[in-house]
Image 1 (cartoon, rainbow, N blue to C red):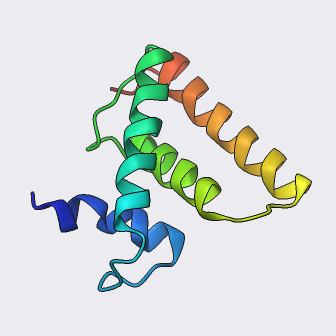
Image 2 (image 1 turned 60 degrees about the horizontal axis):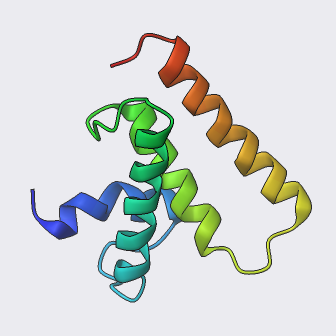
Length: 93
């Protein structure tokens, strides 16, 4: 899997055209942070898992929004927490 393909699912989720490379370094960094957070939580970091992909994409989108509203922050934070709970208790590998 090339580096470009590795980020396509994140770019698609964030609404970034696949040919735009302006955010690639930011996405790369945030993806690593998201994977680290999943590892610290003791859950799967397997990117073939759709819930892991969703968590990474949500985290990256959350980090890309400048000056997010409190509603957006709460919504995204709750969403990420739910995904970690699914990975923890849902038996999803």
